[in-house]
Image (cartoon, rainbow, N blue to C red):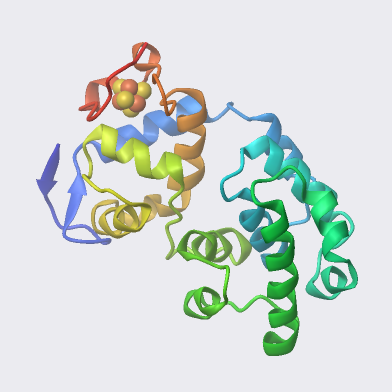
Length: 230
Ligand code: SF4
């Protein structure tokens, strides 16, 4: 599936990548989840992207969106968050996973942003991951969707699982996937990759029992590790 070929992004690229990305773009163009529609109502700033991403960790998308809307419709800046009590934040974000820990973390991050960064989210990946509670995935999402930067590749569970199934890469962790895809996936696709593969993973290449019989890129897929499918 992989062939040696120089690309702008690294030393190898993926065979048929243009065709695959083209097919997925067309196939998923009209697939909009109810979460997508709700997200449009949340004002997008680096801070709201950051907070939503923290809420999303180990939490289903629909729960994350509702919790983000409840919290951010009232408190959408670090200053405002600091005026809320931890208990109130807990109530607003419940039932996201680890809501008690996340409520405290959101307050702590807001305090750091105010004290160290003048109330702004730093426009730097390296600065972001220095803040306790912000990992690579969150920092990548903030750089991509909060600051509209093209040099970042955010890897969630779908973005990790599907390229491995396709046989593009063979990795164990999202961190390895990020590194490998940055070498193999042409940079022009980095921006589309996350939202496209999240949708693909929600609609067709499901975590358990993917819908291979209706998959538009089936002929390009090695189905690595796929034991059950339909
Ligand atoms: S053929 Fe199956 S495993 Fe491969 S990408 Fe499609 S749905 Fe996923």
